[in-house]
Image (cartoon, rainbow, N blue to C red; front, side, top):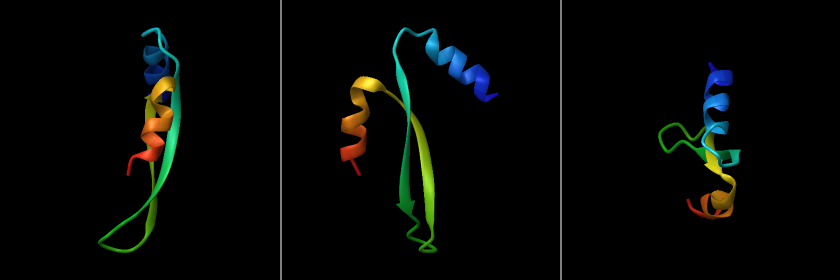
Length: 50
C-alpha cells in the first residue's frame, strides 16, 4: 500500500519529503514517532511548529 501512496504523490507535480517527529505521550510518558508527508517547500515550517 505504501508504494501506491508514494506513486500517487509523485503524480501531483510537487516534491514531497517524509518528516519524522518524536513526541512524548502525555498519558503514559512514553515516546513515539509521528511520520508525515510534507511538500519540500513547507518542511522548515512543519519542523518549527509544535
